[in-house]
Image (cartoon, rainbow, N blue to C red; front, side, top):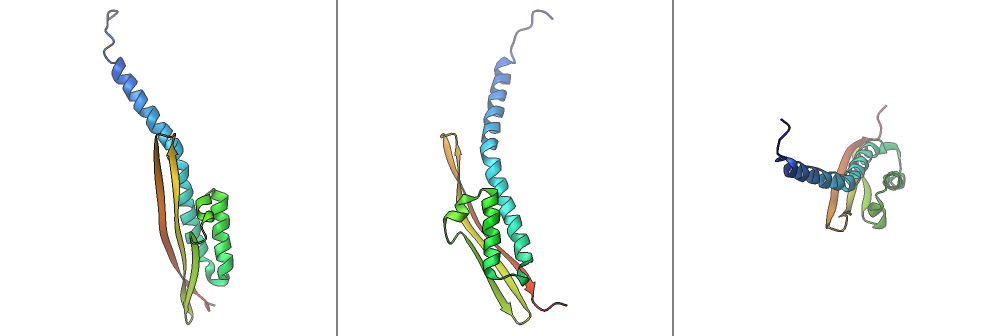
Length: 129
């Protein structure tokens, strides 16, 4: 067993190189996707509790959450975050629309743009005892 040839060295090096490239790409992409997902979840929660809040407060809460998560692209454009309420008697809906783009730069080699176009609609009930 002392005279083995190193036939597997190139395959191992290629595998490590591919693993390193995937790790570096994940290092750039995961925070952007995570921040997006957290903002959408927060909008879902905010829309659920919007029955007793004015529309301006709902928009401010969404923008504060976007600022907290570092989604500055959503704050740069005035139409990126829009909230609206529609009431029909005692029931209605609260809709939060998110429309923005977040660039992901993979170390100057490749640029990807993550487009968020999400509409969250939740029912609101005004006069529930």
